[in-house]
View 1 (cartoon, each protein chain N blue to C red):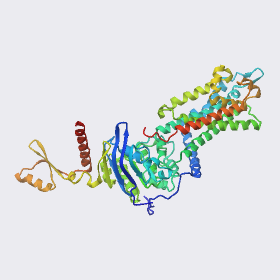
View 2 (view 1 turned 90 degrees about the vertical axis):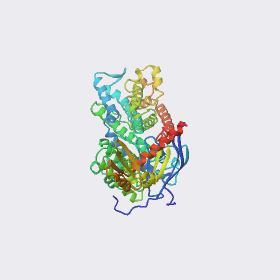
View 3 (view 1 turned 180 degrees about the vertical axis):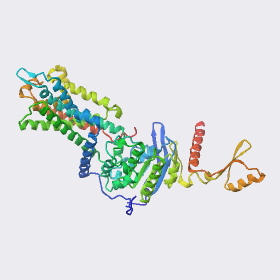
View 4 (view 1 turned 60 degrees about the vertical axis):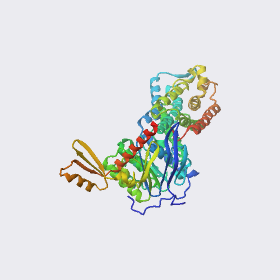
Length: 291
Length: 286
């Protein structure tokens, strides 16, 4: 097997429901050991894309390869190499956390140790509790635990930290970093841009079924989108200037001697850049539709 | 987390394509898991597991002054109802339990989760049918013990009768379970599963000689009930537990065991075909 080949290859993927294209000519690759974050608004096509890669949905057209296999034809051998954390889970489990993990570990040829996995998701104290008696956030951690119990080569995480408190999220991030350091490749969808910034090596932004931006997290949106913004008030009106040298610009503001009101220097965060990308796409889309 | 050196994340090369040993091992693992979860589910324990013994107790107490039978030989209510309650147990533990259970698992994401793991579908079915078998055996044992100990029902002593009991039970519980798996395709959601499945099971029990003596039913209804397998399972159980003279109450004035085997067997085949056609881990693109 070629270990330098990408773990995920998506080329011109398209998924239509009637005349509606949920996913439209999406292409990207994930290299072995890489964490790729798929970002985008609700209904943008993130989950449809990830579910096609997981083998849950058929595609209309395009080429998809996951660990060298077409997900539409992936058998049990292939599934044994994947870890899947679905977006929603509503199981009313009448088994304990440890019972379920021990049972699922038996499905895989080379599972992780159950106690180690329980500890890594911070459920040591709940290991003997029935899953239906857990809180929503705790159940979500069981989902994550089930996703990694098989020691996967490639882990799919579809909005994994929804419902986590900040502490649980930090703990989850530590877990994902340790999986990364073990060499696990990860495809993550998330609404939390800080999460993508913390965990992702690269990210793609999907909007309206199209991949509108793709690149290293710290290069997303291009260099121009990172130009600092100086904001201040001049009389009653808000003013704003984008400049590569905000210090010099502020100094020039001070030339007349008066302290500018409401002075701020902002470096756009990933969230600002993302929101701008999505807003630009929406505007372009409206213009296109208006023609 | 891991203190050992990271394992290389490459495929070990073990093939799961066709591996009966693994399918069976995981199937047995699923049986244990399913049985444990079943007995923790309060409503399933009551409405499927204990229901026949509860009904037997009610009938035995309510009709304790009455005799059941034809001219010569008469029976107590407990003795008369025992075979019917055993047949009801087959239907409840198999069809009702499976249909509701799987419909719930379909809607709550359990099956979707399995679809993403290397669990073979056959192991899942082995787990389900094994769970039905284990709980069915325990249920039948409980019903027979209560009938015998609490209500003094005389149990057959001939080995041949128990042999008949064994094959009617095994064939009946398997057919019932497979039909339950097929029926689980009908409810549109887990919430509606009870509403779809329980009436089907209830009507079958009323027309198949479980709660009402089969000979009391009009002929057209008897003929209608004969289309379905429960009538035949109940008839097989009556052969085992009722005196020989009671066979004049049957449709053909005989126990017709070959008919029991053929009718139930046909439904088993029908259920397997329906399951093969309808069962999917998930409905793609729904």
